Structures are given as structure tokens and as C-alpha cells.
Image 1 (cartoon, one colour):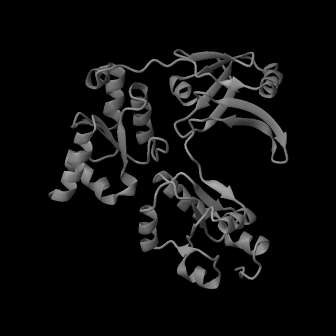
Image 2 (tube, one colour):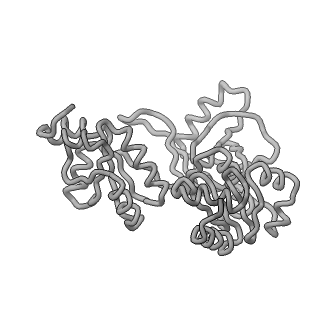
Length: 309
């Protein structure tokens, strides 16, 4: 089957207008498959700010067309200087062999200690826990999806080492890149006791709003786009006004909004709307809300005239 001419021109533009271009599942900050995440991790070693990506999950035409364009059946696909390089396994092999350095014209970027701050409260909690541990160095992990790990463990080859809060902190290179300027605190309050991490590098997340908080934002005009992700039948039973059913037309209109537009989603109990909110966050929207507890919680807390079902 021949590739549509318009799609071929579009793909040509992608791969030729950027020196390094990656077709992947998800985005650099939210990879949606392990293979894509692996290639991002490798490219970030060399080009922390110097390459472009396209999320094939957001465009079925590109997702299928790129396979024919490259004559390669899987995603991710890496292009350098307009030429197809390969998928995850090939990129990993070239990274290990040093060939990727030659193609990119530079080796991995030097990474130093990230300047972590450990507050006195956190340092005290770590030192209390440290007494019962075999290893005394703190190991910090920040994954590509900004999931965090804190544990005591042995030294590893290639560790980046930093002194913070009277502790020796060890981490891999990827963590060191993602932890620049990070603060680790220890807090105790009504929401529980534990470590709190403030990381300025972390991408936006879906924010959970209780019914009263959403009502206030709607009243204040802080949220002007509220989307109902339930079925038309459910909407016929109960609805939060003003909201729009997220059908195909509404989704297209939403996708055309300025990505800084605050948007909120709801469903019956909050699970389906969380998935929808996460999807649009990955499309580049920076202020995305989900109604915790859904319309059922809204009925109980904000407006009991909205039927429960």
C-alpha cells in the first residue's frame, strides 16, 4: 500500500526540519511504553534540550504511516539528520558501542551533583532510619515519569554523589539531571506524615479538585471549560452545569484551545475523568483538573438537586 502524498510530505517535514527527531508513544515527560522511555533516557544523556518528539498515540495516521515511511514495523523510531536510525534495540546498541556519539557529533553530556536540599526535618528522619540500615548512603531515584525512590543502599559504578543535610546521597545520571534544585522535606499534618518532594523539573500533573473547590473555580471564572466524559444516557439522568459532553466534536474543539486554558473533567465517580484528564495533559495542556468523586460527590456536597444514580 502506497503512502498518502500529503502524509509523506508531513513526515518529510518532521524528520528534515529537526536534526534529531523521535516518533514515540507518549511524550518526553510522559512516555507511554517502556521502549519509548528507554530511547528518551538514552537521548537525554546526549541532548537534554536538543531533540524533538512526536506522540504517535495522538495521531493514528502518523502512527501507521511512519511504519510504511521507514519500512520499520514498530515504534519508537529515531531519525538523525533526516535519516532513519532504528528502534529501541538499535539505539541501545549504538549507545553501548559509541556509534551514537559519532552520529550525534557529541558524547553524553557531563552531569554533576544536582544541588539537592534536604531540610533539617527530613535529615533527622533519614538519620533515625539510618541507624537500623546496613548501608548508610541514601540512594535517590527519579524515573523518567518522575516517580521517586528513597532508600539506603550500596555504591554503584557511575554514581553521582552529593552531600546534603549531613547525608551522602547517591544517584544515577538520569536522576541527577531530573533532580536539579530539588528539595526533600519531612512533614506531619492532617494528610499524614512522610517525605515531601518539591522538584521544579517535574512536569504538570492532573490536579484533583473536591466538589466545593471546583464549584468555587467555576464561580470565579478560574475554570471556564468543564467536560463530562460519561455516556449520553448517564448525562440524561444527571448533569453539572455548565458542562459539555466530551463527544468527538467537543474533543476536537478542546484540542484546538490554547494549551494554557484551564480545563476540568468529571464522570460518575472520578475514574474515567481521570483518564481523560491525563490524556489531555499529555497533549500539552498545563492546567488540568479532575473532579474527585465525580458527579456523585457533587450531588452530596454541592447540589443535592442533581440526582444520584
